[in-house]
Image (tube, rainbow, N blue to C red; front, side, top):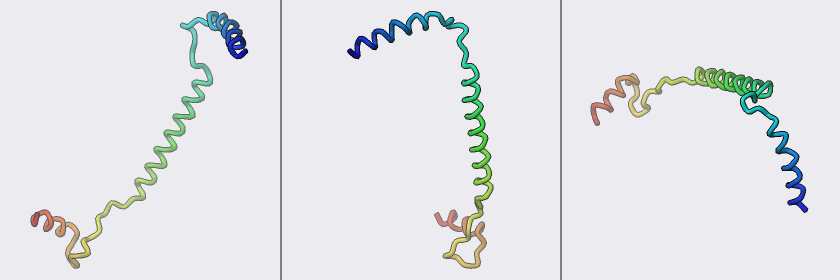
Length: 82
């Protein structure tokens, strides 16, 4: 029985598909709405990422093994010792 209903569905849908002009098919309003929603989502994610990246402090802490030495000079000493 499932084969019979599938066959009937195909025979009824094939003429509908032939009526469409393939050169005139466009995404329409639904395509625009989906694209607009995706664009807004990307914009919101970029704004959130920018806010999170600006809240991060990239300053390097001084080496606790060398008290009293500025962070810049401690980095130069370790490079020279290598």
